[in-house]
Image (cartoon, rainbow, N blue to C red; front, top):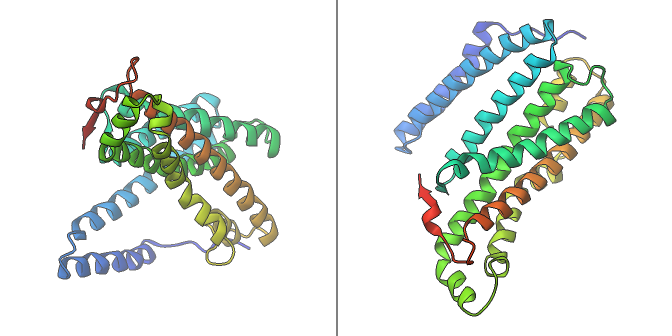
Amino acid sequence: MNVIPLSALDLMAAAGLVILLAVLSMVLQLGLGKRILIAAFRTTVQLLLIGYVLKTLFERAQLVWVLLLAMIMLSVAGYEVMARQKRSFSGLWGYGLGTLSMFISSFTIALFVLLAVINVDPWYTPQYAIPLLGMLLGNTMTGVALSLDRLTQGAWEKRGMIEARLILGEDWRTAIGEIVREAIRVGLMPMINAMAAAGIVSLPGMMTGQILGGSPPLEAVKYQILIMFMIAAGTGFAGMGATWLGARHLFDDRQRLRLDRLREQ
């Protein structure tokens, strides 16, 4: 079965729904109308650009170009993690913390799947490497951002309790331990909910795309299970790593709470 092509008119019809949503937002004074339109415009431009980039990349499958695109994706994801927090770490920590955790987690898992599970040759084949890494980074980015936001907000709101526990002789791990665990739980919850609802409440994006593209449903299901397991592991490992490193950075060598290392967005 061939994919039914979409014309510009088809996309304009779908865009009309988003415009209607923005208008309703303005009428109801939700303050989201402009943001909806900007987000829709960014989506269109960004996806069209990446479409042309991937078309060129697929025609010239070279490792250097795949790695360059992967690093650009990681860089943007790191910025988005920082931008989504109400209070982020200042300096290089604000950007580097999420970026480093996503790099270690997402790239390691993507390599493992490409080499040991799918066993694609060469391993950097862009038709596999870029979509897998993109889905990993997109979901891991959300989990890490939620975890770090809950960590910094929790530390700020409960600074009195943390300092009291430090005065009583507890080390930094124990003093902030419950906040760290809650931050990790918050970061993992969207992925847990997505896995619990998959196949009953929703048909995940990759599976839907493969089915629309003509793949056998059971083969599409297998790939979707693989992707969801990858995303769950990537989100969990990155969230745990980023939260632990962030919590450690909130204390100095003398185990004093250093909220001056945070800045409000």
